[in-house]
Amino acid sequence: MNRMKSLTSLAVIATLLVTLQACSIFRSAPAKTDGPPPELSKPTKPEEKKPEEKKPEAKAPFNVPAFAKEVKRSSYNIAVFAPLYLDSVFATSLEIPGRTMPRYVLPGLEFYEGVQLALDSLQSQGAKLNVTVYDNKSRNNDVASLIRNRLLDNTDLIIGAVSTPEFKPLSDFAKQKEINLVSATYPNDAGITDNPFLLISNSTLRSHVEAMHDYAQRGFANKNILVVRRASNFEAGIAGNIKAAYDKLSYDKKSRVREVIWNDATTDLQLTQYLLTDRPNLLIVTALDEAGAKSILRKLAAHKATYPMQVFGMPTWDVMKFKEPEFAGITMYYSSPYYNEKTDLYSRYITDHFRKVYKSRPSDMAFKGFELTYYFVKLLMQDGVYFNKDLNKPANRVFTSFNFQPVYLKDGAADMPDYFENKNIYIIQKGDSADFRMNTAL
Figure 1 (cartoon, rainbow, N blue to C red):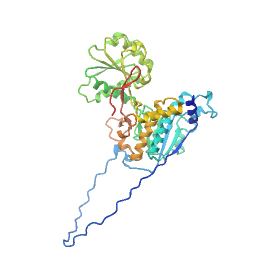
Figure 2: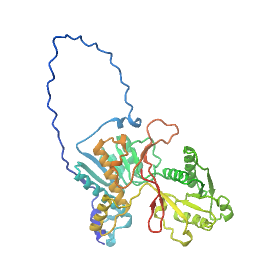
Figure 3: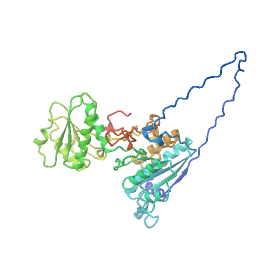
Figure 4: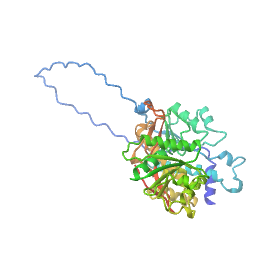
């Protein structure tokens, strides 16, 4: 309960202004020295002026004029959005009903705490920042109100654990004001296009299945690749993304991908006609829900002794438990843009802080809040407001590796990107007690 009491006092703060002091280092200019006197014995001809050559105008990075600017400030204004739900928790008073913090509040609070720990670390490195934290689930001070009242106009960077409905208006604002918006946790582009100031760190499902298909093609010399899906438009769309990834893959030894449509009435004969006995059967299962995933796995488990199989699940499988005896012996993988072994210095710092203050272990939301704040504020300090020319700096790596790439949603588009997305996807094997990363970090 100590942790709940500490988080309760933390949650009372709806907005936070943090000013971090930094010192400037000045270097004196070198003293000017006189050169040798001119030779008077040999008169020189006046140098003929050559016609000036017009240099071709440098192309703006990614065709975005703002990215060609160098805008550095003595201090930066940063807005952080976290789902704190303060209106719901403190609807009538500052007392929490039942003296227990609701579970739905904890992810946002831990994200905020990770942000704060990153700011403390950056302060020790000389960062000078004005940071304001907003509750993006506030009813009285929502994103639309903040924009309408011009409270975000002077912001240099936005970091947000945002989702619907606030994601779209915040993205539109960032595009209009040319402010980089880091989407910290939402694995979706929400239909947003033509916004190169949007940076999606939690990769979209399309990127996940592309990476999974690529790993299946390259990781096994002789394989039978099947996409196992239900007859829904959503899962048909996932299968379509895999087919598109197959078409784009420039790999000499790629194997064709076949599609299997299943439901609870699918018979063993209908399923096994796609399986082979002499090579690994790589089954990409498109079910995001646990009930659907386990339903097809039960069908497959009945044939694991006859048909060698490796099952690739969706990113939602990271929190699923497959402890049932019938699943034993099936090798399962899932994908994630985030992987932290929690053995590095920063992870120990966060873990120690939570143990001392809250008497508990931090969730992944705390680590994500720390990592994204630390990484992007470092870019801000190094390259200024428009750091987009070089988003991927391995030297700034905290826990995971980022690979932000421009995304062009229109075929043959040569103009500015629709957004930037982290394309570094880890393929992770589920284990009995721990999960293991299979592919190497960038």
